[in-house]
Image (tube, rainbow, N blue to C red; front, side, top):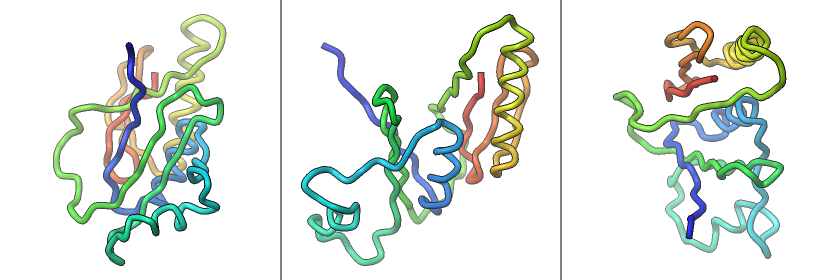
Length: 138
């Protein structure tokens, strides 16, 4: 039996980074679990310390991809990710059309605060989100 999985990303500013990842993945804010009306109401049940930081929870609107949780942590990112997200750009056409779609998405993400780390021409672009977390657009 296969198990479902979620991805969790440590952040310095979860609400800000959530906006970036919603654009990058086409995700939306995940609604709170029933019967809670808001995320804050759901979190209140855990009796967390006041300074526990922010969080954001995102999901694929079609329910296919894994959930993405963004949780603020006190320490900064200091080393390369051991695991990263590959954003697969879909569509029809040959290699030139595929590369054009990749380049378009890279441009959108750069405008949203990402940086290009490395380009493997014709195959993928390695980028870093606004907090330095690496991912590929392919």
